[in-house]
Image (cartoon, rainbow, N blue to C red; front, side):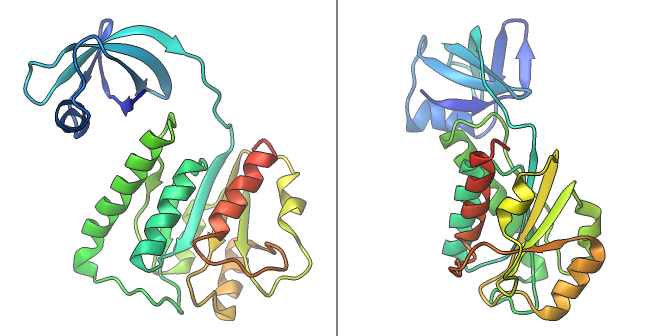
Length: 237
């Protein structure tokens, strides 16, 4: 069953009026009376298509609300921007595993350089990837891709209850040490392909981030978020 995010509710109907209209009418070619799921204000509804005749709109009728369970822990991924294919993978898999916000960062050792004139275009593309992944994963929320960070000190505006930085030089404190604690929000930093410079680690410590080890194996930058988010799911976070 297809799932779509909607923002307009009128009486017992939802109005779909975004890019999903093209998907419904021209890609999967749904018909009247077919059943789809709609997410409205983080609630999931089973609905029936009742009108496909209006240009740029699809009208659906609410059948019933679907019971869902949502994690109470806000998860913020702060990640060094990777090469396109790896970055797309990171966005997709992090969305599938429940991340709430993604903050792209340019570290000192970043291989990827982004032209300032193309930042808005990049952000739109990245958000679209998360939108699609959220629908495919049947999530009730869509992760937000925040503005690109080039000064690590700006991350002080994004602090959560628990703030971690995955660093390969950390040998003592493992992830599970923190995940068994009580917290309502967590942010975690993953470096770029070249890793995080010691000078940057010092800045992150000053802001309030704590080192954490992800184990004896060195994970790729695009794999590490999957490890952390999966661990959070295992700990019922």
